[in-house]
Length: 369
Ligand SMILES: *Cc1c(COP(=O)(O)O)cnc(C)c1O
Image 1: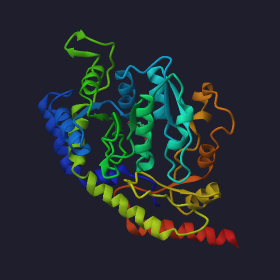
Image 2: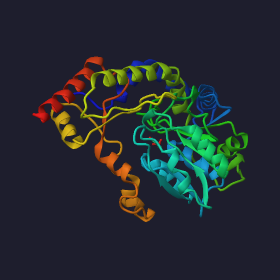
Image 3: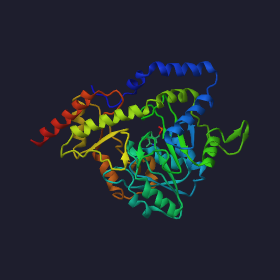
Image 4: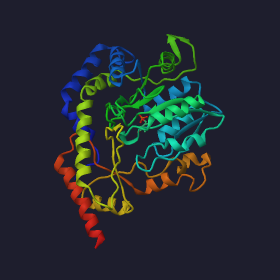
């Protein structure tokens, strides 16, 4: 069996270090907002090349708190990609604003900057690009549009820890970025976790306050805040795992190369990497008109795959109220029918990737007969 993902393999590699870190927290007697969180925030800000980092409960909360801190809410609109995980849209909804969906570029699968301007109204307050699958979004044109219309740019970096756009690290490409440390992300905790990175001092202070009941001084509340804190245990684990992030991202890069070199087949569209992008391959996505058939064939041959994502946001029951016309987001709809994510995780063996490739090649040679 070739698994799609297996965080246990990665965590076993550094099991002793993780257990030591956990023990240290257990013995400290201090479990929320202490030294580990502070140290992690400093180290992750350093890693992303930003002035500030604020640890929060999860990736969804990271995005939500940024929006809140910028006073984006009721009556406001936020432009997001139509092709993304539901959390991007939910963060906007949580804040009370309306997500406005923009189609992806057909090659990068990230938001198409050329289609943003037509969606801007007098209510638009922010653009929230996603660095989907670990590929940085095309930030320069997005930042330019934002400047022209006086909009905030908030990036969803939940799938792209360490990716670079024109040599600059994701996390430092806009006003603020939201990260997730869900266990299977490139930097994953052993539970939930998230963070905000920014150079905006005021924003950093406000989300720091919002994550802890809106309080700066115990029992004095400046805002109607939230409880969304990264805990000491997860911070201690993340500090260990951050040391391995670059190494593990290059392992993902090697896995991606094996797929890219092994899958030259006209029936399959491989990921496109623009010259300004240094992706970190959170996911490896291929595209084919025979997606369901290929997925079934691989399943029968013990290769697990997944689809990111099978139902676009505007077709979700939860978002019936968006009022998107049928076919208005046809690129997104078509993608959801054709994309397939191949196995990608730390510890995935080279020979297994080659086995996946052979299976795919065999499937297409057979189905052509
Ligand atoms: C994982 C993810 C999130 C949400 O992160 P959680 O920690 O699960 O809340 C947001 N956006 C994208 C693109 C993600 O992949």
